[in-house]
Amino acid sequence: MSRKITIVGAGLVGSLWATLAAKRGHSVEVFEKRLDPRKSALAAGRSINLVITSRGLHGLERAGLLQDALALCVPVYGRYIHTLDSQTRFQPYGREGDCNYSVSRTGLNRFLIDAAERAGAVFHFAQGLSEVDFDKRILRFSTAQGKVDHGFELLFGADGAASVVRKELVRDSSGSIQESTDWLDVDYKELLIPPGPNGSFPVEKNALHIWPRGSHMMMALANLDGSFTVTLYLPKSGSEVAFDRLKSPGSVQALFESQFPDAIRLMPGYEQQFVENPQGVLGNVHCSRWTRGDRAALLGDAAHAIVPFFGQGMNSGFEDCTVLLDCLHRHGDDWGSVLATYESIQRENAQAIATMAVENWVEMRDRVADPQFQLRKQVEAFLEREHPTRYRSRYGMIAYTLIPYRLAQLAGHVQEKMLAELCAGLESAEKLDPAKALASLEKYFEPFVQKHALSLKAYRPG
Image 1 (cartoon, rainbow, N blue to C red):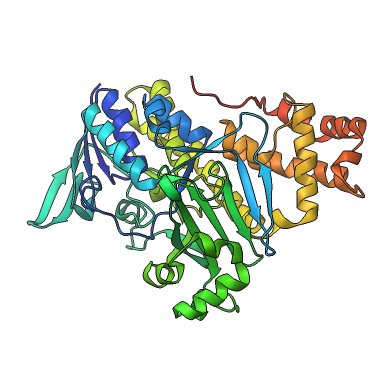
Image 2: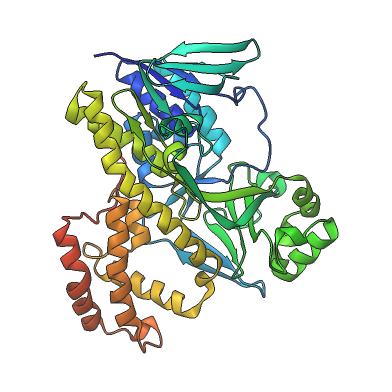
């Protein structure tokens, strides 16, 4: 049965859900507080470049958009580590064929809005939501013409980490808003490495570049035009290398000369970029509920905004959309059951990836340059190479399969024990005893895989 679906938020997740819902025959309207991003320039410095991994690919494929979306992307096969003495080291993500896709958030958003409109969705821009009455099913928007009311039948809040829909959804009977944000003590700024001559890439384009420095780091991902979006992560305060110490171009220059010397030649005018671009904050959002009966649900960052260090914010939001589709196939037009099942599945997965994203922050800023961490990665590479159907790293499960985040998290705990045993006293991965590795695999990891009936096969679209 066709329903009238209202979506608040025309970002990535809202636009994808608009396409999927419209293709199922529903009447879809989308309201967005921003101006149309296809017709206006967005403010620089606020959008961390994205990577599309298995769950994002799956969502795009379900919408029939995958091949066209991949044309906007640059493939990424691993990490390029930049050490303090300006040396580099490549760490592949996984096995042959494992690949992430770097994409501009703005470019992908424009693409998805176009796709949703082609599917029949109607968009309304410059409509800032101010109030929600769930009992009367009325939304109130602030527009250039004043307050405008809009009735809804079925509401989806995809309006981001500062979601107005969420704040109204989780308000209790006393008026208190039941939500919280775990803020990191780290902020970020975006910078830019411009293209080389004739649009060439000034550094390796098919890698995530990381400058790990312990309490802080910098990373860069390629864009199609040969440029790289650079994100610098520093403590807010309390350190010699912190945002509150960087108030002038001279102090920024001193930071780069001491911490990122090999990046200076790539970034003309970086001092001015730093001073002019806004400083972003990072945190994981938690709330008491995601749904309200058969009439409303939260999607993406509105439900579970997370820090970006596992590259799964958008991917987990796209997975919300595919899980909703699966719930519709299971429950038909019983939207109360659809939304309740969706929340019961995705809440624990969202909590798991939020925890792992913070863990990955520590790994990326610090451990990737540590010899013991590198040894572990080499041992994992051996296991994946020699036993490709029997072992896959936690990162590989998250980025290249559709194994639920919660199960990948639990599998990671098992792997920690196994790898600690294999690496104890080991001088190098070349000296690993293959028989010992197999015995450890059979002792620790395979029982977990069998218990949860996991398929370690990579998700391949089509």
